[in-house]
Image (cartoon, rainbow, N blue to C red):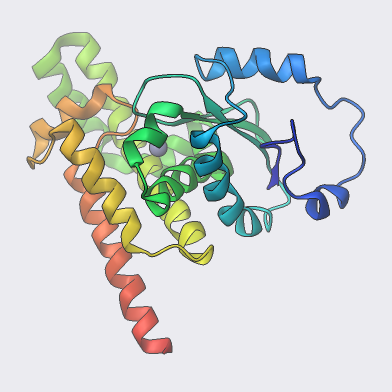
Length: 248
Ligand SMILES: [Zn+2]
């Protein structure tokens, strides 16, 4: 991935950038500002304490992210008070990740937890399968039908539409967790910072229950902290711990 974050005011990874052929149509700073404003629903923050924290996390992830030469991602810190983060894929190559300043505050001094949140979003930008409807259907598997029926019974037509997307969303969230987890542990963060980030979000969302209703109730948010997601993260951590003790 070619990281465009901090292209303005500074080039984050000059070595990596210089390997890429000169691009004729790099956007101007004003154009970038406009896109950030729209996608991130707030103006870009490029200095100050929060920016320094954000930059440390991005810089620590950068050597791993830059091993992928296929994708170009702009990671922006945005003046936005949502405790959330999101990625927008413009096409198969180009993406933008928004990290609201409220998320940086929320993660406090836990750089690793912020690192995981960013790595998870990177997981969405490099996961080509989840960028197309067909790919998402494949990722979602065959449970879509059942959820649609249940969603229809519980929430009417809209519920059915939302629930039919749920297995796909869950599958793509799990994939982003897995890709993010791999990248952020490779970058040298403690694997358990991922669990820390989950725990922090779970306390905030208050969704600690299990079962179908927890899943359906969580549909509205971009990153539902579902029992499935927690279980999946536990298995990633257990695998990681086992592999590490085997190789030591
Ligand atoms: Zn996600």
